[in-house]
Length: 310
View: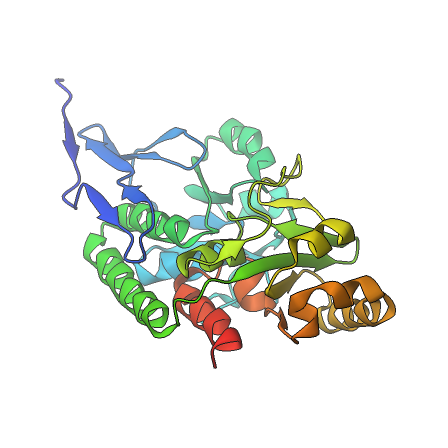
């Protein structure tokens, strides 16, 4: 049978409304498969039929999938990102430690894997003949690309375009409201193990870039296992002397906040930093800045803007 390929009927390229990178279309279709999708790990994944039993390894995928009409039958536990409609779905464990037996028990016809966290599941899924997509959803451009991929799974391309256009408009409105003053910003990430510095590819880092502000950590050598973070140094931070410091966290947010404020009070070096002297150190909420805010990206952008320009 003669094969043919046809491009799905949506625009060849979507430009971010906030001056972001081009979002290329991820899908081609042929008559022998429902779709062949390029995922964020550079893999070409052929799906023989329209997925009807999707399992996700990140709760951040739930709302975007639901918004374009995909059927989800399993998800990880999450304190911050669990929509009401997904609360009674079977759990596949913690996002950092997916239970493979629970996952297989969901009988998925597609598993959507969080890039940089759950790729170790790929050999198991391949052995069980379960297709998987590796998706990255940190930056706003990532979210828009993921939405278009998910819409290709459901066939609801118009829904994705409508959502993206709406988010673009909200974010651009926030950016237009903010004064075009140059700001030098540091983004710290606090955990029980200590502090790291967030780079431009992090959630907060990507939003700082939307406003045209300077991330003082830009150009620093990233951590080997985390390309969006760099090692923290009090000496380096003092030399960078940012105007504003944002703090993201993982763990008990209130405890981490209290510990950091105590450390700042106990170390005079912090008082040499303009952001600390001017009381421009802000703690960001985990529900928007720990994992991807997904469809709530406009809310995350608004949150950062209001902290500096109420």
